[in-house]
Length: 224
Image 1 (tube, rainbow, N blue to C red):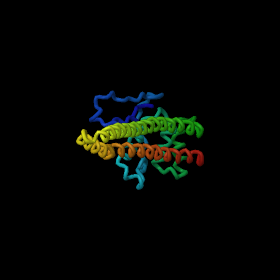
Image 2 (cartoon, helix red, strand yellow; image 1 turned 135 degrees about the horizontal axis):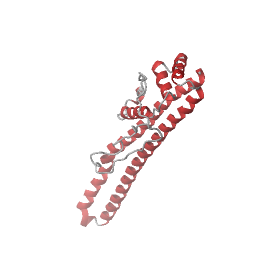
Image 3 (tube, rainbow, N blue to C red; image 1 turned 90 degrees about the vertical axis):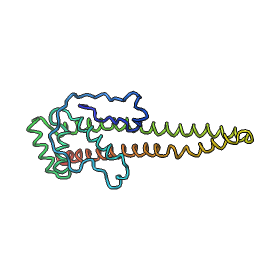
Image 4 (cartoon, rainbow, N blue to C red; image 1 turned 30 degrees about the vertical axis):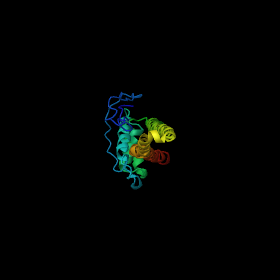
């Protein structure tokens, strides 16, 4: 990976409350190329669908995937340049594939359909690796929070049970702990919901970019 843009600092971590924690880093993989691709941006790439606009984290995660995909670009004309060129003209237009392929041939005379399809696997595999990492992170954080809530409820429930056996002596403490128990779900509702929304955004962002890539792969198979 040329540059690491798949780095969601604070995505599942509250930076204010955990800013003293060790910052996570992701090591770049197999390429050192930093060449900036010159193809025009797609006018409709990575745009949230209408049904997905209720997730407040979706645009942020779409942007992460888009920048991460850009960072994967390797030297020379390969699937990345083919993808960018085809998307800019129209992924459903057969002529866009022929035009991009012809242009690619002027850069790399040995360019072939099989080479493009082979390189497309590199990009999809890298995106899948990143998706799996953050999907696991989100699920882990969600499970940790759920377990913490269960444990906290269990501890308070036991305390309440003990206090109820001594109600005359500990009536005030019993009332206090019951109030704390009732607050647990409300206290954690916002954080729990935020993590769930980020997991959903990660799923949607991965699907969106892979759907876009698969359109081009299908076009290459059909029109080249």
